[in-house]
Image 1 (cartoon, each protein chain N blue to C red):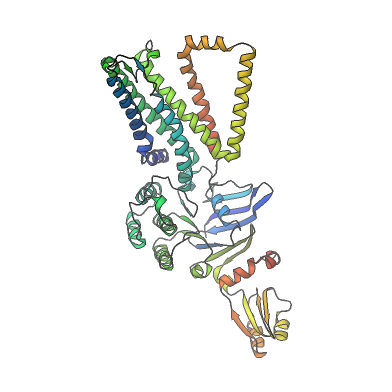
Image 2 (cartoon, each protein chain N blue to C red):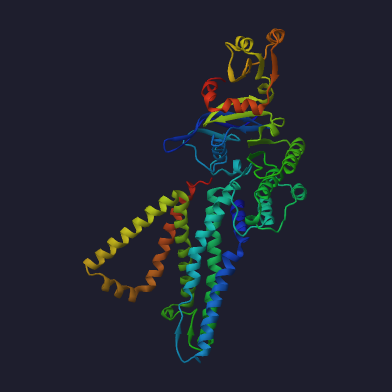
Length: 228
Length: 298
């Protein structure tokens, strides 16, 4: 337990990378959108989608964080398990804080009537029907999903090296091509889009088991990973 | 004596290549060990396995009586300073030292501060911008100030100048006298450290060649110099590890304990018996043409 906290403290030395940079980027992107909204006098409705930045950032950040901190911490004789638990806890914490901030910004957005210029940035229109708590939850589960997706990919790299990555991506491309071919063959595309159109909230929920699988895989891979 | 490391038939293979073959040795508490050998001999691989950063292909490995893999009871007692240690890009010298202070249970803050001054490290400089020598100094400070019961230094002074190296030896011996622990040192600069070492392990091509007390090893080899015929007759039947001849003169290095009566006899024949340094001995032993022959020894 003690060492897990040490791992989190080591991560927190890089608070810029974990927390500040994604928010600086997101707020900057928001400011640009807001400026456009003001310049257009709020006549056009803007559905920015800029929110995606912070999610993509989480995915990429963990690739870099693991590449740099795993060899460093193993070199300090930290257990692989402590590294995994500490890093995951850190990600949960950062995601929780970011989700609350996103949620708060979404509330402000609603209260200010889309910043007065019809700018929908934090409060996504397609989540209108979801309860506030549900919205907060969706921000959170999608973010940790992005994180663990990055974590499992960097763990494959850590465990099996470049060749492992190569095989993994070839397999991924094969599976998705075959899958998409099968979808076309059986004429399932339209049906599935229709299904998504109605059930997209379910899709968010489905990230939970996926996230758990990624986390478990990352742990199993890291347990056998080495550094030199 | 308490054995804190026990290695039994340890082997590490990469595909068909065995980097470490069937190595067996033990490390006793409270001594300075030298792990010596040429580049690629397998020293670093052995140290990585001791610290559970690499996995053995076969064989047994016990550190403080337990398997070190994912074992905090063992890992918290270790400090492994390696040349290839990597640091996060954003880290400055001070960040690394703060992390080390929070990780190593026996960390001595004052000692670290004193070493920092000794080695003149710029605290605020990023690790990425340090010269090779400075990077080594950071490792040395961590290794010394961690006061880990088993401290392992792998080529700790790459790029360090002679002043800094002797500073390292000095501080190491001083602190070792005040705070006894077990130290394992791997290096190429055998002459520089040979006086500090209490026990020597020599690895060559993945195999353990020598496992001896340093004092025993020092008396174990010598060079005979003199006229060719006399040297040849003296050396016949003895374990020759090196020979050279120039004109009618010949010098032969023998890997044997000196026998006092023989010594007198040799000197009467006009032969000169010269002790050799540990470095010379190891160079002779690990030169490929002789290494196979001596491997049977032990």
